[in-house]
Image (cartoon, rainbow, N blue to C red; front, side, top):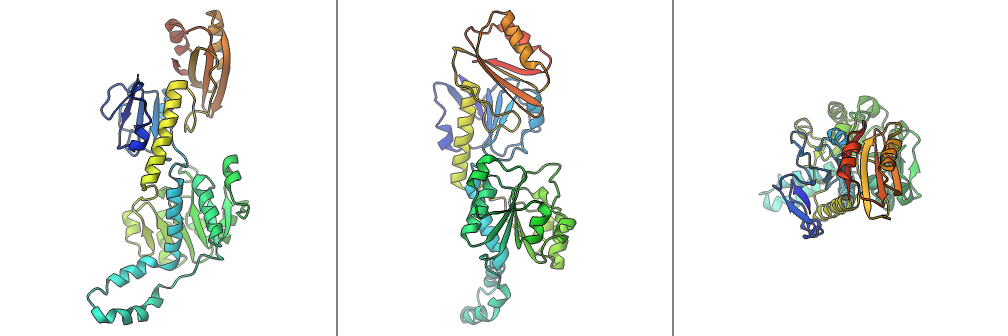
Length: 387
């Protein structure tokens, strides 16, 4: 029986996937095998030693102590693409909001409440203040061509925009999904210099924090519009506000409000609604739970942020799973210990990702507890379990 602790309200569509004869699922469950989470923060939480995996029903994992999990051999899963359509739709809406001054017009209209018969005339006289350009024929620069970026680029092509994309790390799957009409930018600077509209779709890290700053803004077209539904930290807010106030930028639409941005008239702050659709919550929950079940029951890993993708069709009655640091001779030490114990390996797969590696080993014989202790004591091995 696997024990799953939920730290948020998880979509029932996902939870019903857990077979009740194999899984116990509850929010207050002690010593769980895995934690299922959406937005709850784990950085100040003691993660029990029993936990083998943390599954995040969403793409970002800023609320999870990934480094600590890696050191303890805890596999952290996310659900890239599960909420991509929801975010994409809000990006398209944001492009329109940045261009047509729709919110400004609506707010002005509300100010006329109570003017009765004057309203039609006032509307006709004042509407020119909120005029804005159409998207068709304009250049959209998409920075980051992952699940969301590809969908935004493709839909912008359908809207008649000219789209340029920049992503030096684009995946094969993303490349196959990308419209052939999307032009490739060789450099970020080249994209910024060409685009009328810029949409950010990259993860937040040390290399990308504050990447859109005064220097980058000076390289943009005068009056450019920026949409950032990825991460607030990708931009230098002070530089964005200064550019908006000077007219260097026409608009900044973000899903990450701050007190400073809320005071800036030309910034439109959406209250983090990118993935706030019932469909996205369902998709992410289903995806996270399927990945979690496959890992707990078969040891396979897909969409982990700290361990490599690894899958092996089972060909023997017993399975050994080993997570280790990515250092020389780890596989040799594991197989040598198994051979010395007379354990025959039927099949084996080893993959690595940056500092860590993962092994799936199928054997004809069961692995004795003493062997598990010996393997767990090998320098560099961070977790061992059997199925």
